[in-house]
Image 1 (cartoon, rainbow, N blue to C red):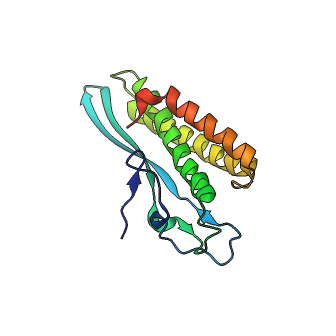
Image 2 (cartoon, helix red, strand yellow):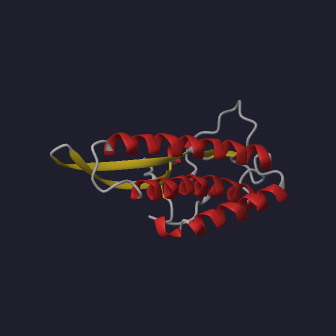
Image 3 (tube, one colour):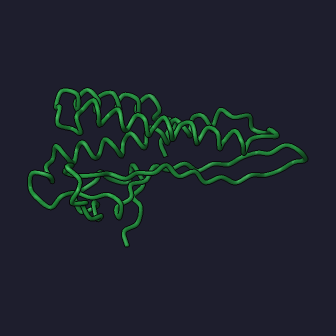
Length: 162
């Protein structure tokens, strides 16, 4: 069973896509990502301090690609890689937001969970918008625009890379 692939370890390759393509899908490939949040809390009276680990991961077993040359093109792989990069963008936004929480508070756990829910939901909306605006990577001009925009946003948040 393939392990999750953490963002930043290496670019995706076609062999990472190990799920089975559904016959009902019209798409060449599908990328499943997730943002993981691990937290540990230390208490001092009514005050709590949180320590967080945030990671964007690619899920090989739930990601798939059709088994033909046209589907497994460099263009399609670049589109799928950008889905993974958008997940990393969500992770960096979450790392930044968590780093801005007060060091000690009575509700750090609730605040951390609320930030997670908010930023993951925003990331999912961004993923949908990406596919809509690029027509699932078929619109080369929009694909390039998204690539540059995501690279720029990742660079702005480079202090929060994993």
